[in-house]
Image 1: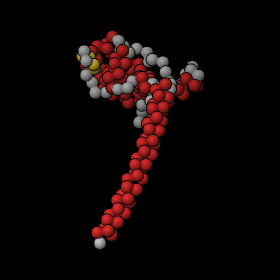
Image 2: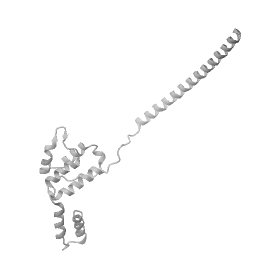
Image 3: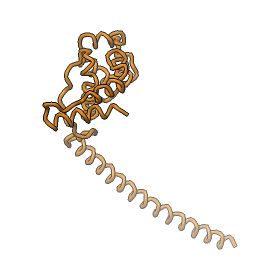
Image 4: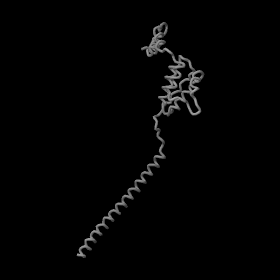
Length: 179
């Protein structure tokens, strides 16, 4: 009986040794695979580092800067439209609200700049966003009754001696403000 127990134990021991050998071979193979993967990652990282940097922003249109605004009421609406087109068209140049606000402040002069000056701090412009700044300019320089003004101008509009395209353009501009 001792001989059979010893023989059975030797078989189990041999099977365990065989399993250990297989596992060691598998570990070696896995280490080789890992080394190969690390080499591939290093190669790709090196290639990526040396590649031309791709922009994360779409190519900007590089639109012209709007004209400076000095507080002239008749120019406010067109100036605001120009500013919005610039900010939207060249959005990558203005990554956050402070960049946009500073850009707009740089376009102001005279009375218009004076209106925003109280909000300018050493750390930036103390406004939340562009609409807040434009609302201040609207209160100061905007038409207090744009619908009434447009309605009166619309009623007074006559072609007279102007060409049709000029008349139609003025008609369309006024019609946009009249409900």
